[in-house]
Length: 467
Ligand code: URA
Image (tube, rainbow, N blue to C red; front, top):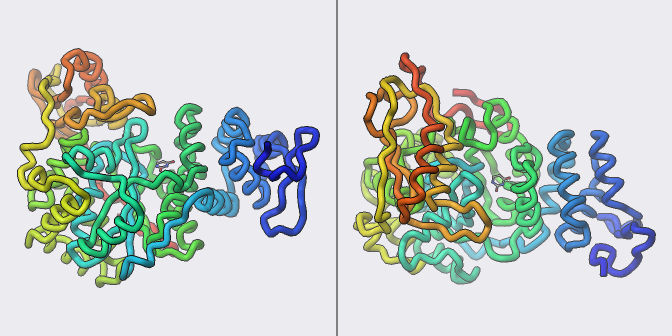
């Protein structure tokens, strides 16, 4: 039975639906919508509602939605279409009401990267500064890692917690990070799965609606977006990343949320560690005042913006607050509270050397002298997936100990025979292919390249501030 027309009518292959405002019934066919978008026309509110509701309910088949996604990829969507699609997707499942948690709740979302472990650092910093963090995070996607997979490398840590208990933990400890519940934004789950296999991930309207539908459904008052740019990001150029950020900020603002975005570098992996337990260890180093400087800098920039949104002062004051939370140990204390609150064994955070360790390691050596003039960061991500740190197929099981420690990054000088990186895996047979892929990521040249920025711009509803 067609759930979209709820049995009212189903004639000559046409589905009958009620228009959004309930005024009159209209006949619609997905075929006609694909034809419209193929010609580059804008879809109406009712057409987008029909498409999202029909696809979520299973009435519109994958092959028609796949054709539509490719048409959107090539012809784009205007701002009204993107906003309507985002709202329809957000309300396709449960919308979370966070009012049971006191104070301003601020969320953060990254468009996805390699070695991007900032949530593990920022969440505790922001909580230590007195702002509640009720965060729903994702798992790894393609070559990019996911916070939930990383947290699960701490024994006992639960990322699947009933709503009431989640609120209770946040009220008690100031922070909890869980996975999205089963019925949140089912439209995105289905559309993302199709995009993943139809080469339609890197589309601005599709990324904007995917991310913002989840953020709006997750219920925070403020949203800080970390839009990655470069060879390891879905958006490879700065201008595309700024456009994506502007679209997402506009959607969030129209939906009544405070929203801003930082454009941060993903031309080079963030930090040295790529892989779940390895990234937890590196995040703990930063929370304890050490760790790689690029990771620390991007984390502080994002944390400052989250605190600003929670009205803790000017951006500069908020950055000072964030730095103090690291220096006085309160951010690390917040991490321990989070681990304990979610059932994890906090001794693993206190003594990170206890975290899962791979039985085998393999050094990838430089084949000549030179400077690292370019990194294909997506290849680093793919190599980590090949070692078991991510999934190639939906049901693959993650190996928490697998991953890569980068010994050399963009701008470093290297001698022939020196280690570029160390690979970690549970099976030695995985090293040959992964090492081959990782080598592809390094381009060596004779001259030291120019220094890269870590944060390129800040996008608000009113302006783009370039740094
Ligand atoms: N992350 C998402 O959640 N969706 C996208 O489309 C891309 C990155």
